[in-house]
Length: 477
Image 1 (cartoon, helix red, strand yellow):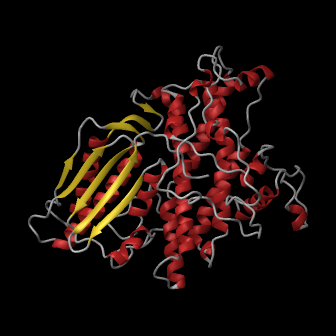
Image 2 (cartoon, rainbow, N blue to C red):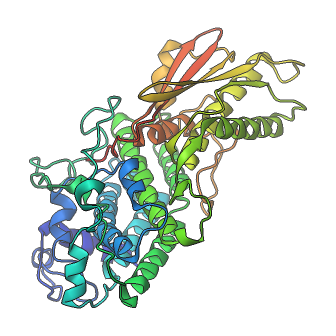
Image 3 (cartoon, rainbow, N blue to C red):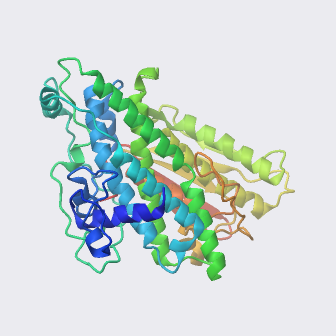
């Protein structure tokens, strides 16, 4: 798939809802016409850049239950078949509009093409031919539950400014937009509730629905694999740009873009991963899981696992016989609804930073290092995890820089293999400056936050706040 074709797709989407005619040689006319070799749903073109992106909360995601029906999964598939192209389209547009030559870096172009290809695969996926009777059943909510399944409006994360992770305005000169493109934002009534709608399961569903659900999940699986190395590839693109432009740091605009881009990526992968897991839910034996969400995530178990992993990486990196000890203070009964993979990532990255600071502060030859403490507290709204180290702290002037991508205290940022392809961004002990910024996005994604308080000359306290109410929506509107 060539980028030129995808660019034509994006230019077509910007116009609204064009006719399915052939592309003409006149560029201006071409913007108003749609290529005949693929199709877009009638409402997608308008929604892509004129509607705000509806946020979804954890509690809405778990309404599917352990074993969602074929009809309910089909309704979710229809939501994602329109929602995901919208999110992908915004990312393609932002990647193409990056300033100062960053959009020309080979790795950035590669990521842009991945998003464009995934967009096309989703909009080209044919929908099943259904009878009017089946369509009518799909539009009716489940009789047994009625409106009880509809949750109240998700709450706002107090750590995030309104619109902080909203897409930047397009470069077409129209400044009346919502930040997601051009045009005035249309608030979709009930948008925050349309992700989950229980279908009327009074009768069996036709096999066409089950076949479509499986095909849609297979398409999502392929897209998920394609985007596995997006974080590392974008990081490589930033390195390419910094070296070409001879820049030490990235500016505010690029920092803001990366925050939006990676927050959106977390959301896209969350929706995709959840849907794939729900489709395959029948093979899952753990009743505490709904998709990839664990309704009883045990904080102590995940914290202990993260401690062991971080100490292992520390020993391997520095050649230590015994890494700095970590003391865990946690009630073993603390559990809440969360995505274990997200929490594991945040704990591992913050612990890894703390252990590195301790070793480099006190020297690799030291026989006994100060103990790093992990304290978990359970409140009514939040579960808070404090990680306290004696790694010397950070100067106050450098505190803002720790949230900057590609900022690192390591002398030289290591190279990334352009063909690097792992399931998720697993940086080495240090050197890329992605650990804290990405971890903060994970925390904020479902209503939490990550904060850092430093005492220069002594150590650093990191506070990881997790929303235990699971009511906060994605900060994407």
